[in-house]
Figure 1 (cartoon, rainbow, N blue to C red):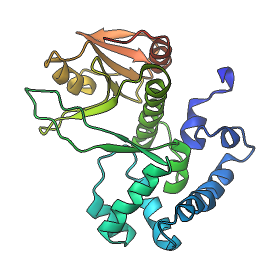
Figure 2 (tube, rainbow, N blue to C red; figure 1 turned 90 degrees about the vertical axis):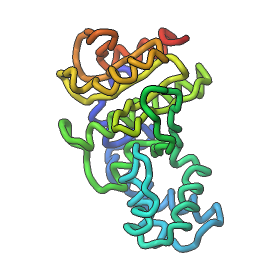
Figure 3 (tube, rainbow, N blue to C red; figure 1 turned 135 degrees about the vertical axis):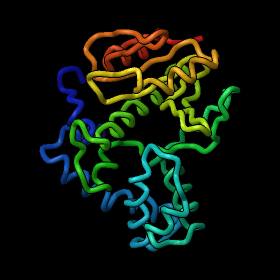
Length: 247
């Protein structure tokens, strides 16, 4: 996309081409999420209860990038828990969401095993949540993480074939993404990354399981904390697609 790419716009309008380049992407997203996605589910023949599915879909959007609490989703959407499981399977089958499994190879710190889920487009999340993601907010950071997740998954699907996972320990450490068995990636929507921001990467580095440990952020120049590289996100993506990472 070159100079036509604007990160703030991408994190709110998403990257569905017809919507990103639309004169009114917000209105188009509302139409897309309000009609098309629900029609997709009806076409699957799984449910004809559109009001229930609509409530579920909006609640599910707030679970983007998280380990899903199915009981909580059921309560908030006012549908049975068994139905929530079915609806999540429908979203996976229709490629509306995808799963990022847990990476389980740490020894010193016990890893959790539940997967995280991401919607296929962050603009869809923004529309379903009914809000814009403002720079500096927690939601903006989550949207930026989702954008990088899409890049990693595309790289895996089209280039490397390696799994994309995440790591979380039972003691609370978490690293956003593990690419293959060689690269750990933490995402921070910040212009000044501190050692505190990379403490989970440092904890994972102590395991000596991975070759690379990166913090992808909004800083303008690369620097390091010990063996952790702090990378501007554009440089990270250039190196990723350039094939710089690997065993």
